[in-house]
Amino acid sequence: MQNANKTIVTEFVLLGFSNFVTFQNILFNVAVLAYVVCIFGNIAIIILVRHDPSLHTPMYFFITIFAVLEIMFVSVTIPKLLALLVQTSKTISMLGCFVQMYALHALGETECFLFALMALDRYLAINNPLRYAAIMTQKFCYILAVCPWIAGFIISFIPTICTILLEYCGPNEINQFFCDLSQLQNLACSNPFVSNLATQIAAVLSVVFPFITIVALYTHIINTVMKIGSTEGKQKAFSTCSSHLIVACLFYCTIIAVYIRPKGSQNDKFLALMYIVVTPPLNPFIYTLRNREVKNSARKLIRHLL
Picture 1 (cartoon, helix red, strand yellow):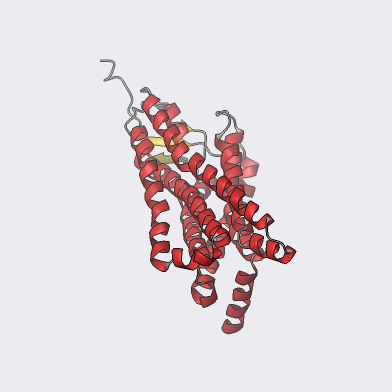
Picture 2 (spheres, rainbow, N blue to C red):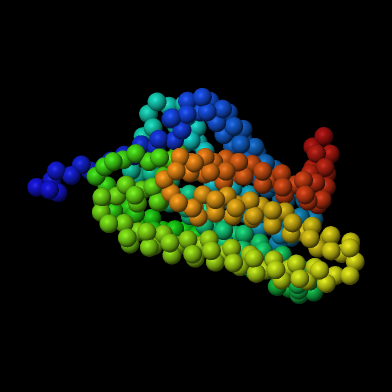
């Protein structure tokens, strides 16, 4: 009888920013602008790299992979955020919620592994310049590029399945503008211990481990660059990895600000806007404005089109 009286949840309510009516109008315009800039900015990078043979190097190959990943990442969340801001109904089906949750975490974890891979590429280029071309062959680059996707989607699959298998009998309100693992685990009627443990293990494997790898690799890179005698040589060496380092720092700083802190605050959703709405449209500008080769390629393409 106790089980029979349980209400089975079939949909969730994403509260989003429903308590901030005035802010919703501003956020809608900002989110639309951020989405458009991110999509077209990353498409522009992909076109530039494919169009200019001088950019057909491992570094720019991985940058195009990152651009594709960014397009997919923002497309998982921002369209739903825009719908929540203009629609009266804030509901999302259980299937849609779990699909969004899995896609968001899988792409985010893939991004973490890709950052580590890009750091490895810069490490090999600066610490082993004579062997770099022999190591980073086209075939090897393709193999390396697939690895972050496999790792990200497999690792995120386990906590997602553990969360799906939990019982949900109400309440069904998620105080966020997207479906998040921790929010759903808190709503479960059954014990979420296994799901929480799987989530923590996945975070260590896909966030902490790549972060430590990036720090270690860039420590070696900085040590190598500092040993270069000429100032021009140091600037040239740093210029090849500065854009990647800035983008990685922005990503990890926002992730740490959101997840490595106590939960339940109204500020959680505002902090989440940082890595979903604010930082993605900045990345194409960082890769272009700080990169002389990309700027030169853009000028050549514009002249060709005109």
